Length: 390
Image (cartoon, rainbow, N blue to C red):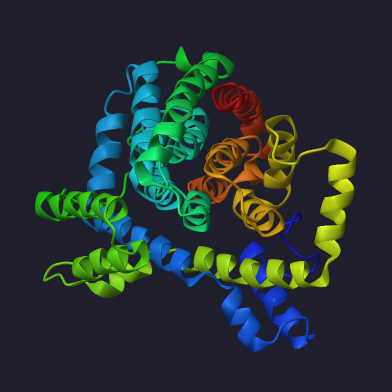
């Protein structure tokens, strides 16, 4: 998981998690029944439903329309940067941040290349702002969904605790990118008609309105006594009943790889816990550093784990090792793990999606170029969060 691959094989983190799950069952570490029981189906259902809601906006052309409006202010790059941060952060509070960056990355690349601009600072802002904004709500990213489910956290209490540091983190993203890439904001835009802009999908206001209603319905589900998995699944099912949008296209926009990654990790961490080795290691670590839930210990641990295996696997592992955490600790875990994902390119799936999608347009968001802004963004944001939760 830390390498993201196996030398000599074309296998990614999702493949590693799936193969690992099969291996622990095949080796007898878990029975098939135990493996199925280890998978948190309700969390996967909520995540799936949120991806369908996000796909509604993509199919309606809402992401494209928003990206075109942002790129249109190319003569004022600082304003353009502000637009990217606000859009990415705002959308990621209520939609799966991975889907947001998947949709917006190619649109920003083609639009900015067409203006003769280097898209890298804006793409880094897109990734880091989507991570920062997603920390504000329990439906903003996969790890928040998992944390909120595991602790049965109140929706409004989560927002009250996590939204303020998330908003400050968005300001940190804007300020940091503007400062560390300052030379790129003095270059005037130059029209390049030779750059392919692609076919523009017109905005379907009716379908966008349906998506907006669906978001409101999802929030209402979390505020009501209705079981979140059932309620969000019903919202997704209603969206699939469409005369204009093909359900095949909507379901194709679901990140099945992420869902499989989650399922595999649930099985692997359950098998790891069953050995007793993780509990022994946890006890030894507590003897060295004290209370693992204390912010001065939890924050560095999340920073390290998130940038080794990614923040989603890190959260699954910690929730397995530290059961019964209180709401305050879970709120801090959600925010700190999300902010830690901005440290390096490997820290979150959103970062990797931006890099992979940008590469298709000849734009290389490399390890060093991301860290140039990502390291100060993550450290500053986590410091703010520690002060807030302390």
